[in-house]
Image (tube, rainbow, N blue to C red; front, side, top):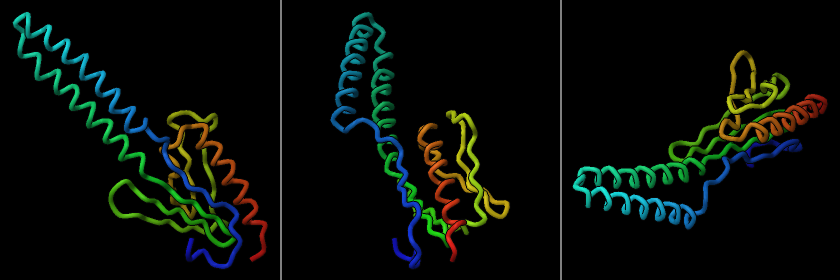
Length: 161
């Protein structure tokens, strides 16, 4: 990573959400749901309830949109680099402009709820401002990363500049 200075890197982690199913598996699931919906729609049409048919198609269309949104959201990432002189968090959203937060590791405090649960957040506090990290990670991965980051921050504070 450019711009980190000559300092040794104490932590270099790329955080990504868990990937959804493969495109082939998603198409298979969508095909099965579509086949079941067509069977139900035909049974309703044969009974004279033809207005049900468009709603069954809408069901498949919404599922396809949800699969697409999940695959797009899985492309985001956060790159966390810690040296004795700085903590850099580079965020790359699925679409939009990447952003970066740079903090002084001496002043960073890591806050993570214990025990790690779905709603638990990993927040880095510095000078009264909080930065959330790894919100898309499962709770246990988030807690594990929090521990790694705390250890690396202790090492950063112990390293003479």
